[in-house]
Length: 268
Image (cartoon, rainbow, N blue to C red):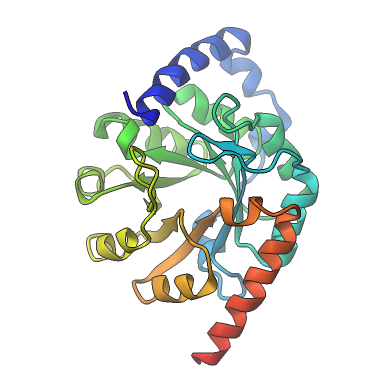
């Protein structure tokens, strides 16, 4: 069993427990459930933004503890002020050290899209995402059968949420082109070996139809990589570890975006 299979098996058990603890009717009464959402697609493609989806992540199965001293409030506000297009918040506790409270805290202070980064396997989690203030959810092709992924995407759209479809290869991509996703993210990290290779994004770009917003995920370590990805029509860049490994991730994000803007000006 690889790490993704392990996480998904655990997630089904976790969701069952959460359903028993807090029924859907309670989720629908939360203050954020009725709010109008921000469009992740729109913010990622805005010319006055960087395209970066900056992530808050304490740890991961591949790297262990990345940053044990996380102030969600400081980091999330710093990310937005630095010019990030959106914020991604890990809400999985067992494997990534996150929580719904992290996303709620970020939502209370920021006027930009927030992606709930979790392992969504049940419609309950979609409703949950809406209730804590998320604007978009992640659906991982490797974790879901196409019919299930399509069902969850439809549930998200019913609530006004956008969907970022994550794929790792051409087969996953082509099996889910009709799922109804708004953005397609290519995860450059091999979930079996944990090796990252940004060339995967370049290789799959030609197979992603133009009506999707293309997002490259993982392994982006310098602004030059983003400039290269833009040549393949990528507009979104999901970055977590690169920033979170610093004591002040928001400053690392700021410096990265400053350098990115310099490169952009040089190529005009």
